[in-house]
Image 1 (cartoon, rainbow, N blue to C red):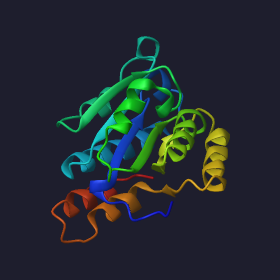
Image 2 (tube, helix red, strand yellow; image 1 turned 30 degrees about the vertical axis):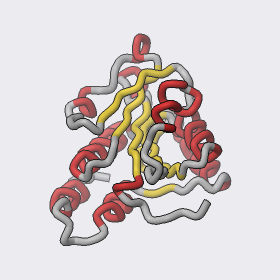
Image 3 (tube, rainbow, N blue to C red; image 1 turned 90 degrees about the horizontal axis):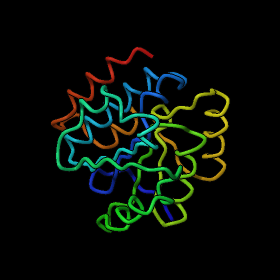
Image 4 (cartoon, rainbow, N blue to C red; image 1 turned 60 degrees about the vertical axis):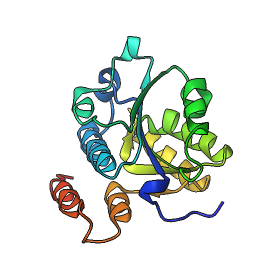
Length: 191
């Protein structure tokens, strides 16, 4: 399947497992939270559906407040899961199958790079979706595992993109009404 530019009307943003028990042990968790927050805020403004997953929330807790406070709008859905990959969870897989036919670009963010993100990317690709990994908006507990996951994405021909590149691809022009908000987010980065 040929890759195309990432277009707001073809994208679904998925943020995986940003829960208290995981966040406190993730590498570069502050950067991860900042990047995912900015992506969610922009996606909401562009009317891009945003899905969040929570891995066994009864044990790991709900999505962290820094992310939950950004959630508003009808395009937000939260799924609780025990499976690592998105498509291995029947409720999520059913929801994926019910997306509009043009919404095939699935942007993956969250944790952990080498487990849930990788399994989801492979499963989505097998099902005919175009998974994209937002490489600076994913993390693992161990930096080496994250690095190896990124290498695996590349060897498996799963495209990676940075948050900044994605945001500007969504906007396409400095005349876009969201340009100033995105520019402020980019300038606010400390890493």
